[in-house]
Image (spheres, rainbow, N blue to C red):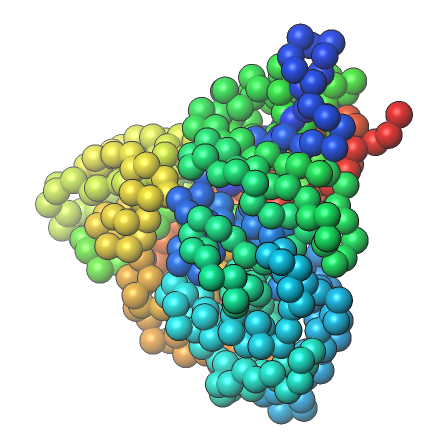
Length: 498
């Protein structure tokens, strides 16, 4: 749904921008400059070395390109690959590359060898998540300068889909730079300046091989305080507010002459993660927590009612979605009984929250409801992403946490017993494996089974699905309605003339 109005809530980790208007007393941005406000700045710029969503948000499709990409409708489209073929046994993929594609550095032609190098780079140096996504690949070879043949060890329904995102980024294999600070891709933009934690500036390539984007310069400006971000938009200092982190204040934008509000959906499940290897290894305590939380009241309180209750790790846009919100209705009495049955000794549960508005607000709400059913909770806030990634995501040093998982089709993470939830369920692992290797109908049925088992097992709690709520200036066009990928795709955005 796209409409003009001013009241909107949004969710998660996307950027926001703005042009300054002379009539509002500020400096005037050039028509071809775009200012975007953002939350959760990237800790570095190497998409292979870290799992922070802020990295592909800035760089995917803008600086780095993939063989194929996902459009606003969630459909796969050609990008660096003009065409591809899949063998009948689903083990061999042949990609034909665009012969005009070049890298930003020295305008060097992009070849099949660069694609092979990039695949092997992810397999060798990627994070655990990326390595898992690339695990089906047995070999990748350059058949000729513009043809890549990838052979899988087993059929995989998810592999090509994953190649539309971070795992599929194609790097300049001869750039000779540190990707953590100097991205080297084939996209329409290059890095002009990066002030860590403050802003990131991209400049348009004059020699880009494809259709040039409208804006010559794009600045992603990061805000730790959502009120400051809103104030910047109201003051005309941003062109796009793509991550409304204070939806209760959306009435401020109720002026169609100054603002356009776009409302869509995301794949960002706000998950209350449980450490299944700690005190919450006791399923009864996990169930008690789920019964204790009034999810509708939480959504209304924390995110002004914007978003969707889902009851599982599957958004409604996935083929294997099933409404599981009825599995754990709000039932404080049942929660208290389970706490008593589990023999809970009163030792405080450590709730460690990232410094993100939705997480800290939801944490306060949840902690109060857990105390009401006899659970003792201590909370602390960890700087996001660096400190949260270190202590919670990497070391699993927590009992409860809350964070939005924005990667599409991420239910499969429950099959990884080393993931930060430390959830180890052989039945789920078997279903996920069979879903990936089987037919498309097998994938749907088996992932639906897995989602139900995970939810019934209270492996985590699924608080709500973030909406995609964006505020722009009225002259901005082409902003994606739905956040179907990790990318803030700048290639479609423009400014009305006249």
